[in-house]
Amino acid sequence: MSILVTITGPIAAGKSTVAAHLAALLSAQGRTAVIADVDDVAEMVAEPGAGATGLWPAAHAAHGAMVAQWLRSEVDVVIAIGPFHTEQEQHALHRGVPAGTSVLRVLLDADVATTWERATADETRGLSREHGFHHHAHALFRERLAGIPADLVLDSTRISVEEAARTIRSRMPEAP
Image 1 (cartoon, rainbow, N blue to C red):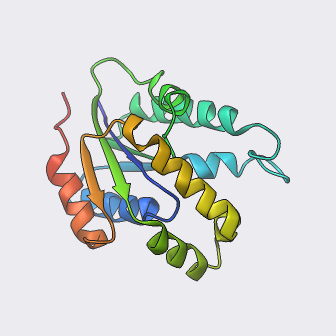
Image 2: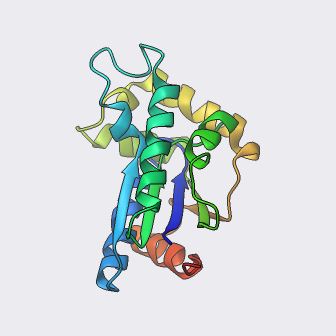
Image 3: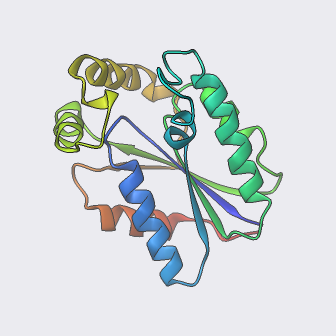
């Protein structure tokens, strides 16, 4: 059975970058890994996008179904990335997870000054480069932080991407 690693946090905390490093580390150890990012699923909604059309909950549900399907495959580790900040988002992710799946919930944090600097430096980013949206989303994350379950909390302003990936790998449960 596969292991599920979830990585959540504010915009531009480094979730995707850490996930890529974790997947490379696992691959180097002979393990298969899938990275499933809810943002990739949300991008499937044509303009004006999932948020503007009210389809963000549907994107989370589709993402959760995809994660569940990968967990039923021969893949060793599924790394699910996204803003799993609300009970609804967490439920959408976990509702289809097969019984007995080992799960490690990681919260990757960074202050708004750091995330804003990262977002504006990345020309591939869209809405997260808009000052109002970015700061509002970060404030919402801070409001919801106490309700986000995490087995491991890492501050990406204090540790490198490689150190974060190694720390997550060292905390991962073994498959049942």
